[in-house]
Amino acid sequence: MEILTEKTVTSYDAKKIIKKREKEGELNYEQKNALDYLSKFKKLPEKNVQELLAGLNKIEKLKENHVAAIVETMPKDEDDLRILFASERIVLEDNEKQQILSAVKKASK
Image (cartoon, rainbow, N blue to C red; front, side, top):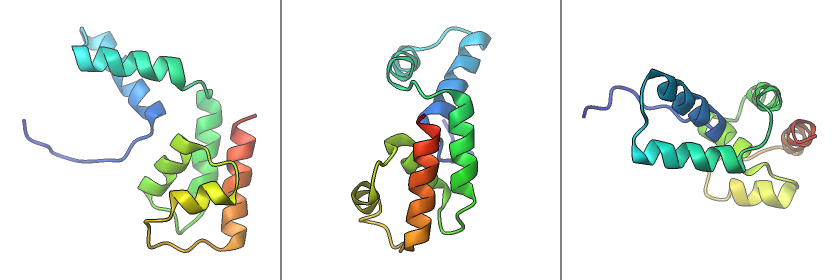
């Protein structure tokens, strides 16, 4: 198997991709397990995820992998953000941190 492209996706995107493949044909064992897990543990409505992604994409410093990590972890406070970005070379300003946290809070309602 040859990898043609690589893209960071959220678990919500992964669920959509697997559901699409399920309609095309039978899923293999790993895909079935992944779909089962995603169906059980990812309960945020797609509309909320899309709003969160739109809000996070407005912050210029955030790359695709940062946005995906934020969507996956849904940080509640600045300590959570600090942990999330501890190994990164990105420095977020206070207003950017507040933008992220308010977008997460709005999406989780």
